[in-house]
Structures are given as structure tokens and as C-alpha cells.
Image (cartoon, rainbow, N blue to C red; front, side):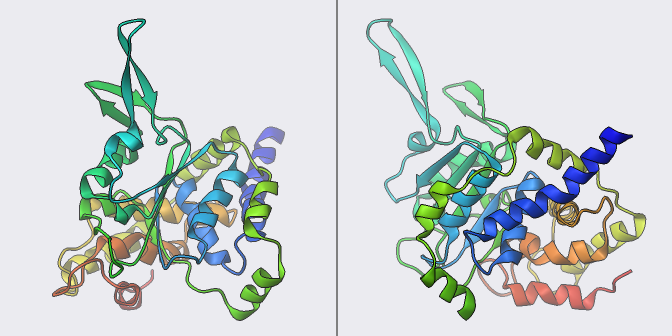
Length: 314
């Protein structure tokens, strides 16, 4: 019993400590920071879409530092090749053998910076890694480190030199979020405070890989009642039959919604799920998977948010 009580205390206090440490770097964006952390606790990958300069890259660096994860950044450009991401085998004349040199994808937290500036061929190099936690090169499968998270940033699609992410790749991301401009008070704190790069260098981990994996296991085991499952199914069913979207959410998307909601409940120290948890993550989980009828590209957050208004809460 004492050990169970200790574990319960860690599950309740550690997420709050992580968020508090992140807020020293990402000022005035607690909700977005919590969404990013929930995404990682759920074992998913995160897509951050926003204008340059609002803190997307800084958030990824801060998450890696606070969680004690090995970090690699890949700057995606139009001339980036799949081998630049995955790695390459180089011939050694002395031994007469090929030796594999792993690419930057062999890290625990990988930042795919401006992912939509790379060609579709290079974008697709991440598909197997994100789905299976492994890569296959030259007929050999190589496992990636555990845990393995991808945080991708992308610039708005209307900017010059971008390649839209295909639906299959968008679906690999558990959530899509935007940071947006800071509020006036938060921006004043940024202007008066130390340089973010200096603060990142001084940032120390709040947890380690073992505790992070324990948190993930705890999140996975959070109880879901039949009433909440009914609510999740009602939301998913509404996207399929409301006539507002080209295609409704898939069963995989429904599972993603449940995983994210469990993580959100875990951030609040609960071991059971409420409809509020589902509502908190619905738009970040669903918006990039839905396309408004008669339009191109993912649906807007306001359009997806109406689903929550139209489906009755149990």
C-alpha cells in the first residue's frame, strides 16, 4: 500500500511540475503547453502549425530538456533527402563492408522543423518511424529509441515554398495545435526577461525516461465509463453523418481521441475520464483529420468546434 500511494502521488504531482517548468520558457501559453505534454504522455506525435517566431521550436527544445530526452532537430528544406533523415550505409575499404550511420531520426524526441518545406518523398521518410517506431533501410529493420516522439512544425500553407502534408501523414499526428501571438502581459514578460536560448541552456530535467514511461502506463490505464464511451462514439458519429465534412472521423481517430483524453485526465491527477477531458482535446485531435465539405485542406477549428455544441453531453 505505501508504494502504491507513492506512485499515485507521483502521477498527480509530476505533470504539474513539468508544466510549471515549461512555463518558465513558454510564457502565457499554459493551455497549449498542457496539450503538447498530453500528446506526448499519450504516446502520440505533435504537429504545431503557426507563423514563424511564435515559439514552436522553443517549445520542442523545452519539452526535450524538461523530460530528459535525447533531442535532434532536422531542418526540413526542399533539397533534404530521405537519407538525411534516416541515415545511410557507407562502404569501408579496410573491412570491405558497409557500416550504417544513423540519421537524426535516431533520437527520443525529434523536431521536424518546417516539415512542409520538404518534398513529399522526404516527408514520407518519417511515416514508418512515426507509426511503428522503426525504420526499414536496405532490407533491414532498425528499431528507434524508446520513447520516440516527433514534434513537427509547419508554416501556414499559403506561404511560398511549402508542400501540403498528405492525409496519411497528417493522421500520424495525434494532435495539431497553434501557439498564436502572446497576450500583451506575456509579451511584456518576454521583452523584459532573459533570452529564451539562454534559459533553455539552463533548463534542467524534471523527470527521467523511467518516470516518463511510468506516467504513460498510468495514462493508458485510466478508467473510461460506458457513458463517456457513448459520448466519444456520438461525437465521431456526428462527424460522419452531419453532412458538414467530406469524411467523418475513422475508428483510428476515435482511438486517438480516447488516448488524448486519458492523458488530459492524467494531467489533472485523475484516474478516470470525464466528458470535459474529451472536449478539451477534441479539436486538436480532430481538426487536422477532417475536411469541410466543398473545401480543400483540413477543416477550421471553429467548424470542428461546432460538433461539441451539437452533440449532447451525457
